[in-house]
Image 1 (cartoon, rainbow, N blue to C red):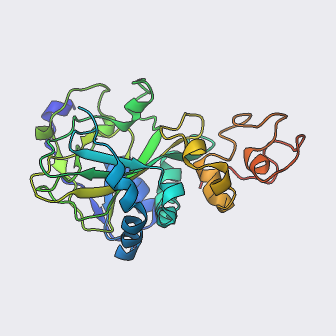
Image 2 (cartoon, one colour; image 1 turned 180 degrees about the horizontal axis):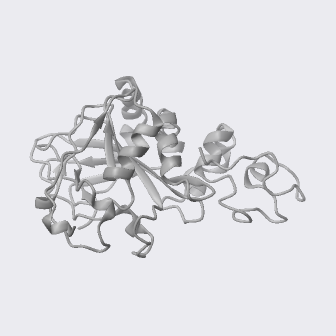
Amino acid sequence: MPWSTVDAMPVQHLAANASVEAVAAALDADGCAIVDELVEEAVFDGLESQLAPHMAQTPYGDDFTGHQTRRTGGLVARAPASHDLVMHPLITGAVGATLAHATAFQLHLTQIISIEGGQPAQYIHRDQWAFDFFSFPKGFEVSCNTIWAMTDFTERNGATRVITGSHRYDDKLQLTQADTEPAEMARGSALVYTGSLYHGGGPNRSDRARNGVNITYSLGWLRQEENQYLSVPPEIARELPDDLLRMIGYAPGAYALGYVDDLRDPLAALRGAPPGSSFGAGVVAPHI
């Protein structure tokens, strides 16, 4: 059915105790789902405390990212409170199921998106357009993403606008806010959506910022939008647990992808293994 004949449908809400299978099924059917109040609000209290100085220094964006919107990245290094969000088992389980056609997936980007009052609606887009606007085959997902509600998301304050089911639409469509529905959710909830879903930030008509934590994942053989190896300097990376390091990219992306010098596994190299260590030895790719 052509997209222009489909009425916008509300986003499906799932309980925090939903199964990985339930979230993955919603992503397959609709391209998106909201998991309500998935983490305690204290997690976001910690994020706000750790990131406040960085957010205050972040410049505003451009025509696409928003002239009244700040996007503060580097969360893994800057905010230990973000680690539980990056590695949340329900999210990584659903992402793994959605991207199961590839050997591995990885962390693609981390950022706080702060939409301030007066910011108009964002251009409706697909996040997978980050890959040089390449038109991947319909139904072949290359990324899976989350926006966590750091503040309540309402239609008035700029809740993300989505088009449920649009992950099955043709590529490069020019859609508008009128085609969308707001993904309203309470603080601590997570909007999960595929990289092929058409969406965009909503207009903030309130007098307070709408803050969301954008954490996204991509196939292990694609370049990450946020350069994790510079965003997380080696001196910080060496203090992180192995599972988080594998997620940010210190793991094989597929067979013979991502090794160091003489076929050393990247995690082994970071940990100081000498040249000659075999590629992939003792390391499990983060296909969770």
